[in-house]
Length: 64
View 1: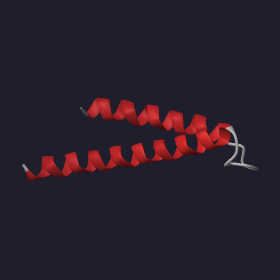
View 2 (view 1 turned 180 degrees about the horizontal axis):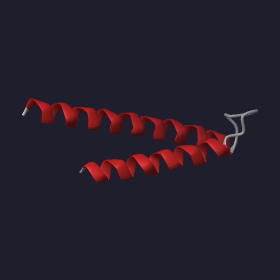
View 3 (view 1 turned 60 degrees about the vertical axis):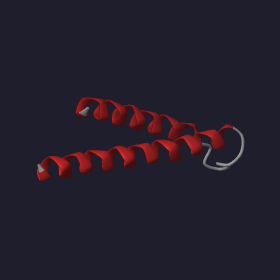
View 4 (view 1 turned 90 degrees about the vertical axis):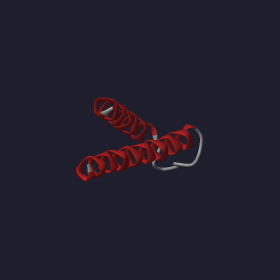
């Protein structure tokens, strides 16, 4: 499970960086930039959730 979380973290970070390059910063909410902004937000949420999962797994192991 630990390796799987690291793989998903790496993929979501790569996708986040890729989508950051696709945003037109002059008009971020028009055209394809809208999709890129939504994707950046989704990737950021996924990263935060995976980091919370890692912390909760570490807490659970310490309680045992």
